[in-house]
Length: 317
Image 1 (cartoon, rainbow, N blue to C red):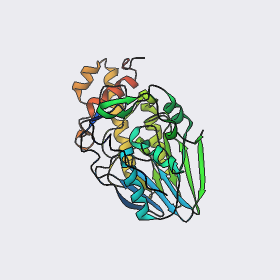
Image 2 (image 1 turned 180 degrees about the horizontal axis):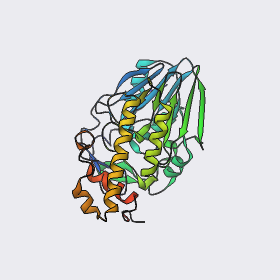
Image 3 (image 1 turned 30 degrees about the vertical axis):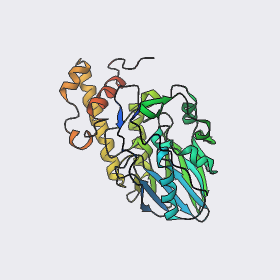
Image 4 (image 1 turned 60 degrees about the horizontal axis):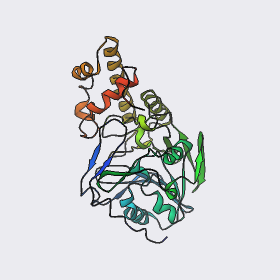
């Protein structure tokens, strides 16, 4: 495989990622991409490639028949991503599965596709990439109207997809509409690893991108599904977070989400407005652990919960 050229225009600009139509944005500093990716073993034939901050973790499945990647990071990390894979194996990178549509997970698609990597994703993700309203960051916070053709999935699936590869089965399945409406879980049963994309993260409250079909009810359902798949020794790769975790952390994340949901539901039942719910601080017991990310904390999560539970209309058509 020939070297993939680094794209530096993004790295020199101040970027804004719009995760939802809610006005919270994650501002990326000028030096955001001036970090090195590193790989860590997960279990069996699976590795995780991560940034130092755990932003958008990539799964790597290696074997004699080739490499399968789960997600592709931001485009400026494309060269580093391939370099880290090369430290693990010299075999061909053959397949890429995208867990969802956000640019920190599909940014490397086009450079990898140019090298012959086949891209797989759920049908809904490709549909989202074709929509003109899907925004990708470009210098100074400007956004492209549509995903480039070369970044789009070459193969899509409806409910589930199985790779018979490197002596194992790799199972890709559609999650309920959670982070987006095209979330994929990738399960490596023999290696006993589960990559959940951004449905599960260890860094913040759930991000529910209603702009791309995400839902609160689906988030809880998807977490229940993941917990049902995970065994006592299963290793879980979060979409964001520096550490590989396990089933216990999944349960903790699900329980936190359900508890906050029920607290907000009770406050709505008392007739409280959104402002009143915010002042009641239904996330207070969890803010120290889950509410420390400036770009997504209780001020962002609680309004989503409130309106998903029928507290009023938040999003404009």
